[in-house]
Image (tube, rainbow, N blue to C red; front, side, top):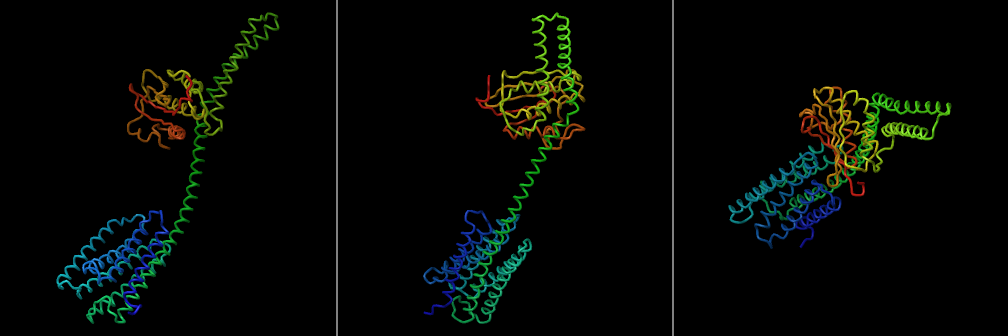
Length: 481
């Protein structure tokens, strides 16, 4: 028996298909690549169909011909679907379903023709098979050109398209031979038949290796694209961090005017009292009427006023410090007092009352300056809310309590509250419910809380007004009762 015959060509075709499938598996192992997966499936289906066809004499005719040419048909259809799946937005699942449905119809038609031929392979069966494969190759050529238009490396897609087209020409050549010479047997040893299948095998092998080259090229391109994307993302992250830092700084500076008036007012009281006490102490000393008990009393008052001045300055320093987001164990009561001290002048001038109900000695792990910023934002928002409110009682209530492993601080006011249509976007950047608001304060509060695992939420107060709830995660080690 001649070693080089059509059967050996089929075996070679099967071996090459398996090799290409294994190469693709090695290249795409562990990656969810739909195009490669479809092409791999096509390679293995072609290998099965070719191998079984070679040994058709030992297998029932239904399996050896009708089923095998149907499997090869499905394998050829999958090649086009593999190319179409290179479009990220392309849904190829429906294409695969249609291909499978077409294959089933093709199998039924083949068996019907075999039935008409008294159970034998007929000319009509070969004609239908050859025409279908011709059409599939032409569709594959069209698919490669169309998909290639979306990529820079069109030349590789054009090569695949040419291979498909040449395969179609070979099937056309075989179709004409069947019509002209009525020679429809696959393994007929005539020279033209041998050349046809040899050329088809060569073109198929080239097509598989070109696809492998294409995917490697696309892989490198994708790798470079992802690297460039990562660089762009890093730049965006850096710009975002710079923007947030600028917003933090802007938020600190936005109320500088009001703070300066409040700080000046708060400092004038202890400094003025200290000056009077020093002058009084000097006068007593010069007159010789300075008694020990009076001296201790004046010194005590001077110490108290000095501490008061230091606390006011510390409050201001905390706001404008550049300590980043370093956290420490802080007293909730202490920071609340600092915030109210800074806002005291405006609270008094607007006749706004403050009610404080905090858990005794409650502490949280938080950045002091950022906590003070959040409180000042919420207190200032409450103060501004009373500008457009006709509420008889202007009250801001700060209520803090421990709930499971969270410390909850509720800041409630009796103002008009937030309109329902604005509540869903209350914490978005550059969105404000106030006519002249910048839309930064509440977003910043949500950002700071989120960075530390906390949360800020809004709901309408039961008696009317706004209610902001701050939730701080705490552990038993953080709390001091």
